Amino acid sequence: MPVSSPSSARGYQIGEAARQSGVSAANIRFYEKEKLLSPHGRSDNSYRFYSDGDVHQLRFIRLCRALDMSLDEVRTLLGLDLNNKADCEAGCEALDGHLGHVRERLAELRALEKDLKALRNRCDGSSAHCHIIEALHDLADAQAPGPAGPTAKKRHV
Image 1 (cartoon, helix red, strand yellow):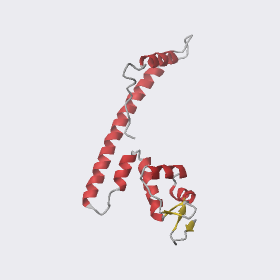
Image 2 (cartoon, one colour):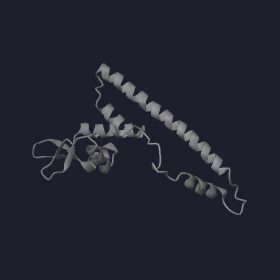
Image 3 (cartoon, rainbow, N blue to C red):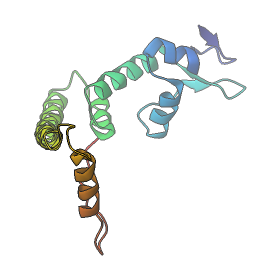
């Protein structure tokens, strides 16, 4: 429920903002730390409080994250003005970039599916030992880091 502060500003405490937005209180704090959101204000006892606009912004962030957008992509979209033609073009560019990331991830997932199927086909359960577990141990040994350390690909999210 909205609370009043001595300055007559009204807002929601973090728990109510979380309920209204569908974003956990922990994530709200995280989004503040990442500068995706600033609380509407603070009460005398330093409790954060959030406006209806802040709650809307949290829903916007939640939607973007559900679309698997990175924090930087969300930050870009939050900075755009829906009434500015140039910002509309920037929004299109941001989504095109995200589509590229999604397509890249789909290709990675298809390759993963192929690898998992091949791994699964190594064993039918009739052998004295499990060829799947054996193959996983072999793969783990093959991935031991060299002098430069492991080379894992970093995802965009």
